[in-house]
Length: 173
Image 1 (cartoon, rainbow, N blue to C red):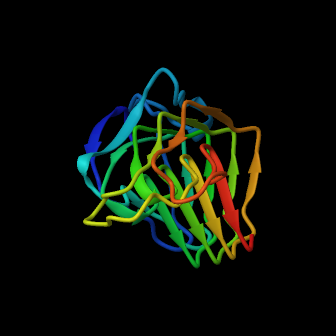
Image 2 (cartoon, rainbow, N blue to C red):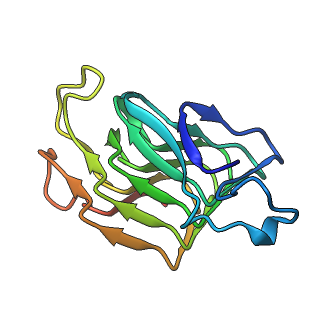
């Protein structure tokens, strides 16, 4: 996908890869530069689940921003699926469980990503109880692998109990 600003949501398909960071004149994938040629998929603080994961799909070199209002995974929801997520930036996403990403019952592989300014908060999508945690990532009955990722200023606001995970929270994971 060429550099630019795109409106979500995007639903990944099984076995299909989505690579960002292209100028548009490359002849090979290795020529892309996802930091210089930012590909932004934006929920504009209106769309829950900016990205919906799929088995054997890869999301690589994309900025996922502005997911809001989801019960699970404002930026990306992986419900029972196992995608690969690499070289991505997740920022300014809000949900009740996992502001940036929620992994439920799958085995997502997440590496070389940045999670910045994501929040779990109450009163998202008419939810009035406290937020449940994992400002950046929430996992439930999952076997996610997280490697070489950076977490900055993620938070869990007004959680029902202490220790809900400003960055990561796992339940039976």
